[in-house]
Image (cartoon, rainbow, N blue to C red; front, side, top):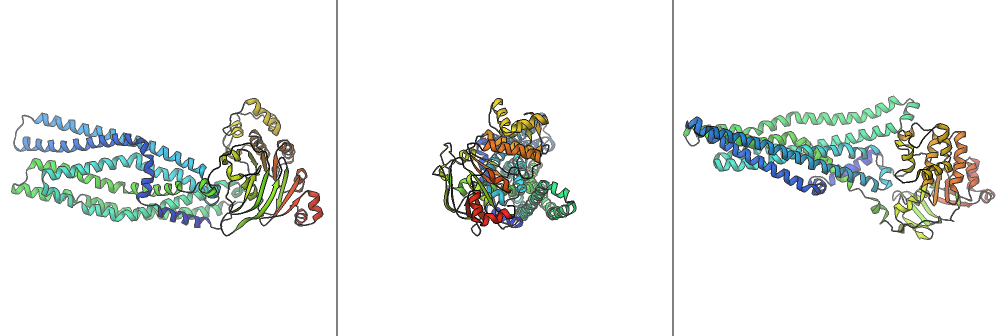
Length: 595
């Protein structure tokens, strides 16, 4: 519906700019609010990982004592007790680490579930204008690919990284206590590996951003082509669509190959630098043993400390891709969750939930989807309760925008809309929309049963539902086609005809008993059999309701009390069919063209 001129590529880069503005730790700090409800789980996991780290360090010390006393000094009186102690400590360390990571994964899964819920709730709170300018596939990517990137970090990597970090700190303390001079040199020797990780962090972030961006573009294009598959098949556009999609795939493939090329040299180099502390330990420790300033027992313990000291850096090298992918995904999810909601674009939600009588007034209303292009210009009219209004005009004249504003789907810049002499802003949006029934040519049908598609969450007695179907004409079709309320309806109503879909839409609206009914030529492109049924159903549904009918055919106007004629966003004529015909103005020109 939006008339914005920015194309998909422009929107893609606009979104990328917004992502860059919320980068680094701000995005992850924002997402860590989903950790708070499960803080006790994370705390318990950290304590268990701490226990695992301490027992590892103490096990290394006992191993040093075993080597020093038994192998060097030949004292074997307490050898078995030391061996038993080592086995116990190592088992305790493994068990504690397993329990800690399990708890961390549990907390991570719970946090991810809350993030998914927050994103889904946010989808319902975004204004319609957001979906006008954003491809459907991009939103799907937020719910799938980006969430999976964060989930992998929370559920798997976070536990490993925190556990390794605790071991890293513990091993530093253990080495400095055992021999501060050798320990200091060993600690300093890890700096090249740390520097390498820090130096490549930005490049990895850029690589992951590119892969995520092109993956999102692929999903958007795929979603677009799946939606247009009937057109592609009927026009023989398979080769054209494949070539277009292949272009997106090539961009994504290029970004993946660029990432693999970068990792092919950066990871081996970082792994080599990670083992510098061990090489330095063998040199300094061996020299100390030769000159008598260092003994075998402490050297063995130091060797275990050093292995565990280097392990977190090696782990970081392996996990940095996951970490950076998580940061990239967090940036994109944060960007999505920070999108303006309806309250931001439409203003505060009203409080009135009163039943509408059906009187509608437009007071000098002007509206545009952007600041440059006005869609409606100073439109004013008044519709009485129960009045039937036909709306006609060429494509782009403002018909659809006018009826969309009734449900407060878009903001307007000037003027006001009143229901029963009350400004639209004072009504609660949900209550207002519940009283405005809209039936368009494009009927939305969900996968599920017929009853689920009719009720959409409402609770209605089966007798009342049956009566609504009889009134709308759907009951007649159900009997002829042997459809039942529990009959399965495929996605998009693939097993229903166009006429059957329209009857479902009419029944769905009738069940809600709206005060105002909006019809967008419900019988357009319908076969003659269903056209008659739908026309009769429309007349019954319209009884006692204010109706606005967007007409594309002349015979539709016969049931209207008045006709509004739109041209270039302005209401240029209004009156009965006879009045407008006598006027011989723009309406007559439209009639000559068949509307």
